Image (tube, rainbow, N blue to C red; front, side):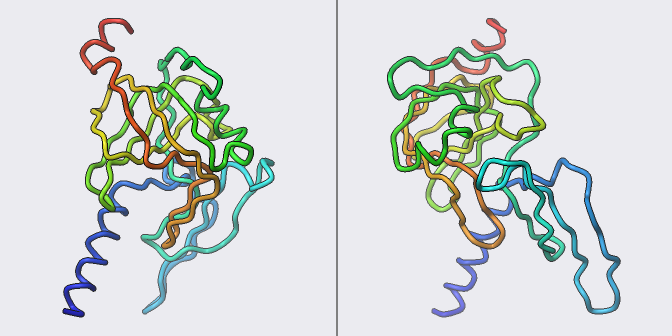
Length: 196
């Protein structure tokens, strides 16, 4: 039974590894030390912002194959999604900028689904972008966990609780994430293409 639990843990970690993209995956490597016999290659990744919201750089070495930072996808040009309506409605970049004030609060955000991974830790994981934010600031992409379904290219209305500084361990850390969200699919991929 112990071996089954180890296999299950590895499978869950592998599933997370396939979905979660590090902030440094699309940035140039800042430092790399050559491997020597029996030692792991190390690299460092740049964080978009520190906890205080100021630009900063993490110089913590990470073993090769592990990632660090707030996982997000590359900036997708051309997305322009109308902001949700209501008192707790925000854009993706507003949620990033106000993440400490919004921590633990329910928000509503509208965005285009740019990535979907299903069945990771019993949930579906979405990345949404709405055209707000800037590539160099790293405030343009938002990760959402949900039991609902959506497809790449859908325009969705997301309602869920904000969690700031979420750390899943193993180097997977989010500056901000919306967890256990309810998803309303407003436009499918084909409908979205027609109006873009």
